[in-house]
Length: 457
Image (cartoon, rainbow, N blue to C red; front, side, top):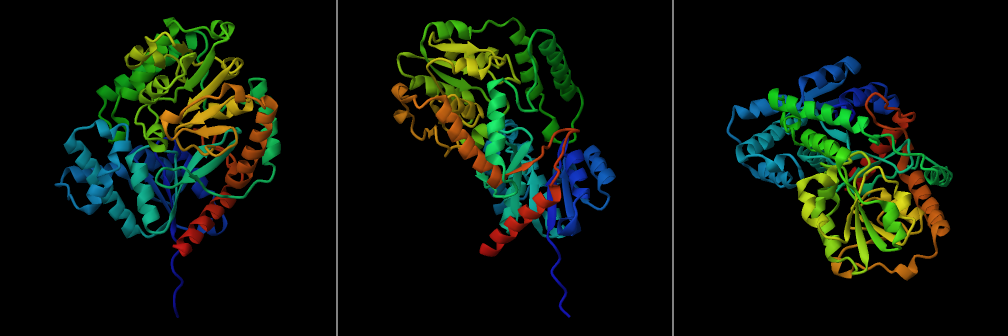
């Protein structure tokens, strides 16, 4: 009698806080999803222990072990090695490393893939949003065998997530689990008009004490990375903590341009909202590898009667005090805006906004102002959003700012409401606050998409 083929596994890249959150989700799965093998890829031993405590049935693969094994061998520079090497450019940490270290990482990832291959086929990979070479390698590995790489993203409406797929992670996966999207978007628009409904991941750095305490915390974290040998390269680079500490400290005494003065001048403005750094979305969703280059491009094509407003990310005030921005800010037509300034205040006068993928684009549409994207965010095709594929064609039609906020709200409610219905599910992945009420249903739908695409291939 022919035995049925074994069910393909659900794999989780359970790094950092996701070791806790993904393993709790995996252990709670029911139905067919709960019957499938569960693989957890973690970066270090402490994460493995978290996973095993929550989901003893799951099988754990520790990246650090494979990197250590790779150090004891000469890298095998075969076709697979060179394929992985092409992924280095988009990893904001690995691209800065010495060649032997890069070779060790590539060989370690190969050993991880070999171990996964021996464990069995993977039908679904659940992962964080755009990040780095390990995420890319796992996605390529799973999709090459007909599986689906699903990277969760936070929706514009708080308390909702959606999943992206593809090498650029720019293709939303259709779930079809909601039917009240337009009503939820309408309610969120009403909240945003009151400056409420902000994303849960935003930090409040208003005043002096909050940024001062946070600067000390991040400074200590950077120092720890210098003094303590990390298990893997993922936790070795102090630069992100140093950048955050120096930015926050500088924000306390830095001088910024006052939006009220800009508004009083009735000058036209193009706003560029900075992404949080380091931010991989820049190199995933656009042809740029850093946002300074993008901002300079915007300035070079700025109309002669227009200011460029560089607005810091709300969770990273002080970023514009970094040395790299000073040449651009030396131009009198470039203004420095603190991260805590409300986007609504900047959009009150004649204004437009250009971004790679910031949700400030949606706020701009809501206010009836022109919005431009140079990347591939999920809202690139929304009415009111204009893609910039060629900077030589970039132009703001100030006379066409009508039909105004009401029409912008209607377009946003209709388009994003439909997006919620087709692609989103209620819930969130956050440290200690993960809540996915329909987790099994969500995973079942992702597995269904994987099976449909595998059959079509």
